[in-house]
Length: 258
Image (cartoon, rainbow, N blue to C red; front, side, top):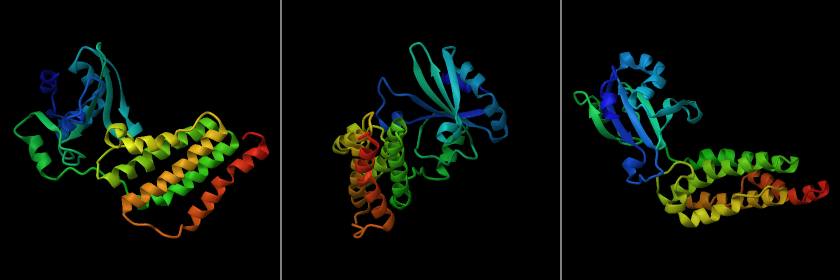
């Protein structure tokens, strides 16, 4: 694949990141490749991503762009057999310094990618407890309503969302560990992974209520651990939402579904 990348007009560098950089690559890992592109050629290269992915290796099966993760420069690909997930990120040299990690440079023209990386240090956004706190209780109320309405699969999706966006990020922040969502939390923070089991829920209202209550209690513990402070008296929104969730069993019993 490297030889094929070198032959693509306008591409002037190739680097690999992700699990390879972290030293965690295994048989299940995907391959995270960064293709550095001359600024003038970048629009045309971006339009040809699918064709370029197919040119890189004849085993190309399919690919789609990465808007779902907020990264339209990304092409998520599957090659094989044997099946291999490959993320191809096409980055203009003008923007290559904006990155969350330092990928390993496999090839570059005249040190252009090294020079781009030297312009700024990598920066991975950390969890912001204040940002999460400003949203958590509104989310909790919303998912409580889903349970009461009987939208159980929506509620289960909500619990998954809370783990990925609030609980796991706070846990990693408190432990001083960089991470994305819940990835590898079983290995890095096994005690927290055990706590998260109580937030998974089941396909019925009672199980979802118990899981939401567990998520709320775990959130307050992780919030204190991550910030190093106890906020003392709960805010009005926290008090109201806690009371609302605590009343779920009674209201569901009235509906005959608890």
